[in-house]
Length: 274
Image (cartoon, rainbow, N blue to C red):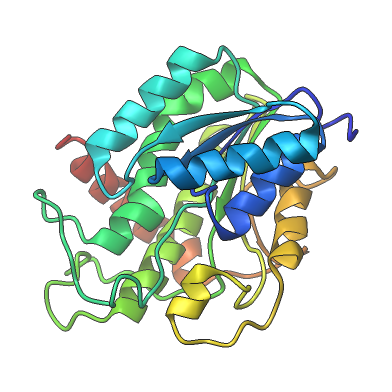
């Protein structure tokens, strides 16, 4: 058993498929207790069985929520807080790709574009709701699973009401994750909680990639090992963006303090509507 991972409580969002599933099973096999999140009870139970088989005991609990709905994000946070008195690692992994479902623009009743909601805003909200627990459990870690596909946010039309493109919506949401990570790390200095983001691997063999009609370039395990490094590695630091296992430069907007401020203000405005 990996002693640093052993006995930890870990929440992995989007852990019923792809990278999230791989992480849940591997972390449990290494000794962690895992909160398995997904939308489908059937798929979540399948992960739970895989965890039991890998770990030799039941180390998984199931949490169901649709992260496109901020009300359900809040209920997810409430359920985490009710079930455990510690949280050592939060992996914001859940996401939808440029082509799923169908690449069309969708918004909720508050006018929040779906890719922005699932890929970024849900993690923003969930992280803030769970920060007291993460801080109380320090040293703890937040890992945001982003992408090398990044594009500057158009703050004049962040919900992309004009000229919508699923690819741009996806890449804007992934850059937002990184901008959030940089701000979060600064705000958590001295607390023992670290925050980092990464592009795990290029075109992993996942449902999201296949839905986009792309032949996979890399394995889920490759991306999983890179993500595990941020969960369990030493000398990782905080407030960094990694491409695989190497620290990298994000889109230049991520280093623009004014742009990060505007994103913070937008995020606070949107989450205040819940």
